[in-house]
Length: 408
Image (cartoon, rainbow, N blue to C red; front, side, top):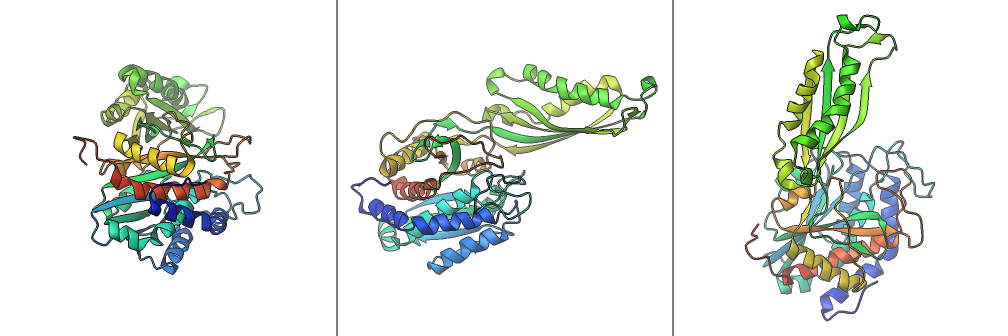
């Protein structure tokens, strides 16, 4: 996996990761078999804390779930943070693997068990080189964050608890089942999109379907909101912003001949451009009210601002390029497109410079899976590769100059 380098610290941490391959595979399988939803990652937090503590690493628990751990120099000239997320999804697993989820209706369908294990492996490997890290004045903070899959996400809790205190740069990776294991996808600039939750509730006078003129025809109004609001938004916003409002649920009534008094429409608003997303406060509300007005229904809009896009800064992406070359070689970066998926890692990048890497998890020549689906299978080689990449990133980060004028 690793390439021979001119830096003995890089070689040492790479060797340590390789020596832990069997342990990391077993640890990840255990997490996979025992997934926990956002805010309930107690067993997962405990497993990570126990392993770090056994290695002599002091941990600080976050409120509820999640933890922080500091490695290397106590009084650091340079501190890099590495972040992973702990939570699973309310998705039933359909893989049939021996280590499949044992929790009904819950599974690691987004690869967070891989993220957590990779960060643990990187932390253990770096801790073995405590003296050399201290000699170089380097410190590494491990951020095991809860609740990435909900809005608002656990990034806020981690940041408020000091995850970024004294941090110069932060890095993370995310499983990508469209890229082969042993390859990565790097992209400068925005790599994910903004993602908001939108819930529209309509209320009105119900009645018999034979007398719609004596009611506020709520189902008809709900259908108009569902079909027309996305279209109106496309005319209110700059097309280059890449905004897309997509409904995932619609509920109204229970009988074919009764006009109900209440209906609910739920969806997500995704925006590729960070500036456009920042300017959208109140726009969805205005459009929904305008579309619903002719039908005399009352519309309540709950537009919850979720996450901005993850924006990879040039100098931080250069660190990931160097780490990729050190661990996987010069041809391992296959690039990636900006995703419409949201990721609350973006909040860290509003505070300190950083970048996110797409980690290939597809078995070469094997099937392509999708995230957030119950049949997701990851190539287990990606676990050690991810650990090696995070460890190398921590070692290399201080050697890449900060972009001129970028600041924090």
